[in-house]
Image (cartoon, rainbow, N blue to C red; front, top):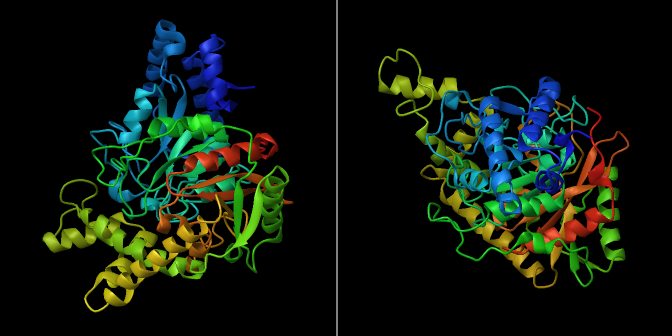
Length: 487
């Protein structure tokens, strides 16, 4: 077995036992990148020289401190290209930031580095995280390692595909409406969207500030707990960062769901869903019940308004956040403008892709005079109703179990020309962001064509530990997560 195939925990054990070095692990991941990256295209930047130097430094720390080394010392990870890494390009999948190199680290990046991680590079994504397939990247689409003709999901498609293809040991993504969870499901890996405020957004390039959240993408639930221990916690640089104490998430790795009450929302098991997806998710919930959990049907009645609500709030915030990209201070600037207005217009026309332009225009429209009350204000009121649905549900249940998407991964180009169909692929994930609650996704089966199917577990605010416990139990008693793509 190649070192690149190991989990974080397995690699950590080998490093501490002296069975391999951080340099060897990093070289194994770089070798794997060299083998499959032309087919998968998960990375926008591979920082080989820097990663090897950091791995050598990690080995020195391991020799000096042994078991006392930080928990990720020598572990090769990769980071979505919307999160700042000092001295490494941060393109956000967009031509407008093609040459932008941040002079600082995001908080999550600095915490990974402090924990000893080796950063291999930056991962491909839908432009400015606006997409569900990683096809809107200005640098070309990422391919699903399970079937290179399929999408890997989005917008963190590179993060999920790289982990599934063993190009890195784990990764970070961001989730605004399902952008960690949907790719994790499509690529057969584990993804966690933490509670809003659990993980700092400082250094995360903003799409929709009230919805964005950074989270881990890993090969198993134990690795998700390990990364959460490092990246979670209050950050004074982020005013939305919660001041709550962070538990040791690895203590939640108990194989036990006895006494848990799991809710199945009737609005998430709908007509038109792929029968194989429906059957796999129902079977997974049935297994949890057979191991001691109690399952009951619940209702989240405002779910049907989620798509409309989300695509008003998210585009409105995007319109505001992306106004800064005008060619004045950094990023792309149109050449030889006739005047300031010409520079603004041509810079944005040349720099942004079609989907980003579409969302900026939608958001600007909903915020404009005469429409703000009818659209943006109304959407915020509906958002409150959606949050109250979850609040009421969690008075009765501990975890809500749902599908992640109506289908398994679809074909590249299949929905690119139909934005509404693309948006509907997030129908089961966006309400989690609107409510600000955590959601964990893990593999629960495969289609007859061999494509992964994901189970989504949704929890109370700041109760990621219960999701990790339930997910770990399911994972330990099934083998879905052990299957690797035939790449």
